[in-house]
View 1 (tube, helix red, strand yellow):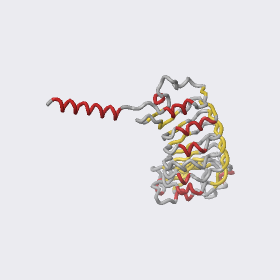
View 2: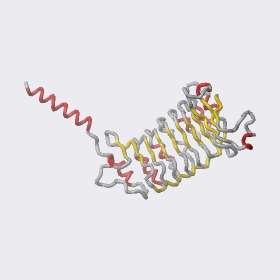
View 3: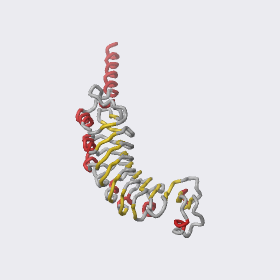
View 4: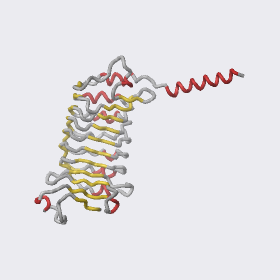
Length: 271
């Protein structure tokens, strides 16, 4: 009578070990990380051969040992073409390399390879070139894109419309110019678009006319002749749907451009 019980107990232990055992990191992905041509001014990371790369600082793996998150903000990282090596991290969903000294263009092939990408934060670096048009060609999962405070130039390319789950797009404090890409108006889930201190033009009204969007997105632009204007969600305001346009203090010259305003002090204009 005791044997069936003991056998059942052993089976439970066996399945439990299978479920809760995490595999060591994938060798190809480990090699990809090891080949990154970066240096750092902060204390060294524990990226050594004696440590499983799933235990490396800034790395998160899934149960199968595939790297799903690479998060190394404010590590003093420097370098150029290293992003090309990340193309082998095909299960990567979160990539945060913000507040470093990374430079050079971002390889367009990176976005074609990262088919599981959801969060990308490259803000506060020295990256240059153009923002890639292939960001969401192979991944419709992208929710957050932050290219703020770099040296990206040119126009924002068509392609953001392929980001069907895009919630946040930030690219302020670059040298972007031209018109907003027409397909950005198709973004059903967009909650925030921030492009201050660029030379972007084009109508923004279409961002707010999508009947499937539950709330109007927060919008921040900067016109070379005016201070930043932000559209903010504020449930405590008395305006229709609780949304208001926040205007910062303007000079008397700038006030003349808004003849319907009685005052140019800080204030909300309800929608």
